[in-house]
Image 1 (cartoon, rainbow, N blue to C red):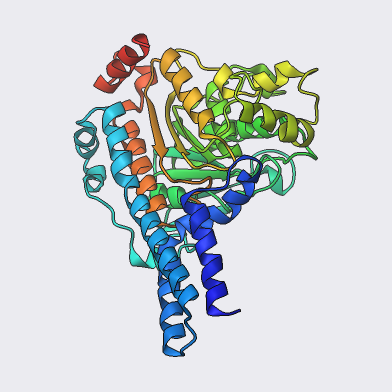
Image 2: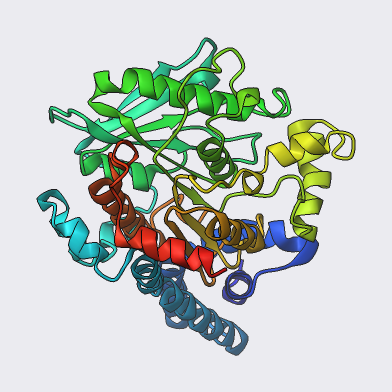
Length: 430
């Protein structure tokens, strides 16, 4: 393939990352735009190297050079856009938690380092898929219920540290409820939090269409119940569980967080405590029933969820689709949420997150932090990038703020923060 053709492909990929394909082509726009956007620094370096070699060999025609220049301009724009993620995240944290939230966090000596900015290390750009930290161990394939590989979970924790009553983070993988594995997602966040002294749990669950919904949420709740019963033996605090996940995992995490008393999702273990203290969903699905009237949500329900995940007619079984929608379960005493979504998401419309956050802020008296990231696609934090590192830093700060200020609040009616009052006032004001 010649220089001009290589640069044409790069230019098309870059153009789609800057302005993704929409409508029926959104999934294609995601598939090629997500890696292009997050790997923009690497692609810019390769474009420069390819151009330099073509010029040196006398094979760089005018068309190829113009395309390379256009690609370089677009990739530079993407890099600048990604570098703004940290600033945008910090603004949202200060707005929802209070401008002094970092002072509250860093009052704990173990979190003092969070006051510092965290530049993306060069090694993370050179090796974006090398996500395991040497100071973190993974205890793999622990069974949380009877069954095969889909009934297992992994525990991540600091090496050579005697953990006791450590905060616990449960990670639920995505994959459209039909694919995915516990070892593939949430690795940056889990490694970061495990290095901080948290105990992290990554779980598998049964997949559709072989196992139609609600098998997935039943498994998530069984994993929560297992964690509450067994995590102390791994150094974790069973009274303080936070749940997170991306895409379908974001849906399942949010649904689990909002339905601790829904018996339909806990068959045979109805009395188990599956409550959590907080939830951090990434690019989740919050309206599976089309209750908001959003056309994209209705199309997802009719074209994908009904035939592939539920294997039921949404007209005849509308109640089941609505029950599976986190947006229908928001209550005043909902746990605190940090909702994260990309404005350019080509698989799950950002309108889902906007509607869910609006409902949460209208009803819940807890903290609801919302981070909407401009120019950002689905699955942006699956591997290391400028944007993913900055957003994970923001999540790290939010989780540590929650640990420092909210841990144990459920057992102390007088506990609370100024952020709660501010959020409640905002909700009351509509």
